[in-house]
Image (cartoon, rainbow, N blue to C red; front, side, top):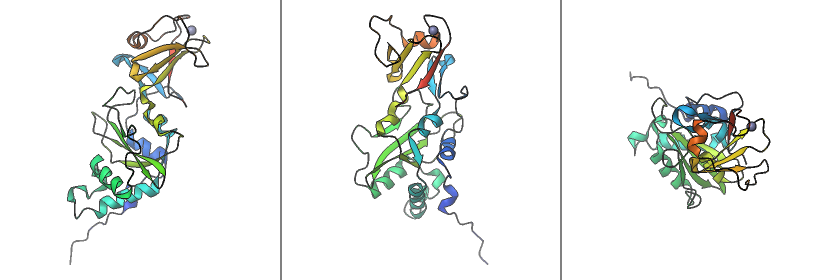
Length: 236
Ligand SMILES: [Zn+2]
């Protein structure tokens, strides 16, 4: 009698919804006020974006293609024993797989990927992503590199549902505003390297007093009425 083995099947590793996949990716989300997708992180003098809400507006979990990836990892275990377990698949296995199904890997030269450690980003650290094109549609695989208390995840395949793939790279942008004063709005770009006063229509206010990002996050209050400022992630 042989020892019974438990057969893994691809569906054991899949998710039922975008929300479920994103919650796995951001297992320890930053605490937010209800309905807020970003907040000031005064302890670290920065702004932090809720990754689940940010990506939910931009991508849809693509179970069918994700299953192809998981199945490929399982089928490849003979050649790459270390990759045989889908839950231990990493960015490298994603790259090999994506290149095997498309000749337009990376999409365009400037849309190569997401690496929230590699550039100024308001996203929690450790999020990695890779764009690829498949049958004329743009996809992105997202995964969590091990980072502190955040558990690593395998790359998960999402369809890019927003109009421009570049909207997924807007994790270095935010808007801070006063809820009392109509025209106190700060447009924040490049992870805080650029801050400008704009009005509600998005026009820059000429002659507005310059504000540094450091001052803004250290004391996020309205210069007119001293109310607390609110902050939100980039919209499109
Ligand atoms: Zn105000």
